Length: 50
Image 1 (tube, rainbow, N blue to C red):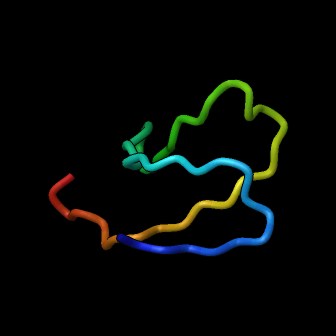
Image 2 (cartoon, helix red, strand yellow):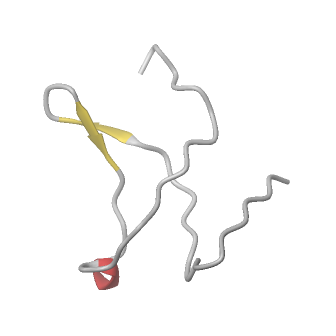
Image 3 (cartoon, helix red, strand yellow):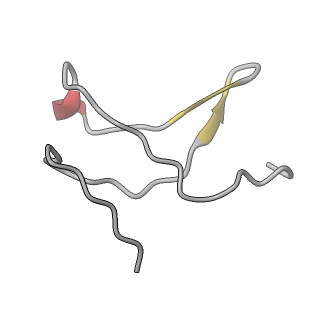
């Protein structure tokens, strides 16, 4: 199991980044997070086939 520590974490999501538009990517978060500050941590190398 991976372990990550932060002093200010409130919730954690485990998701895959999806392609978006012509060169971007996004992660969908719960609507209740609108207006919140977030931190993203990449935990694997990107798959070049996707």
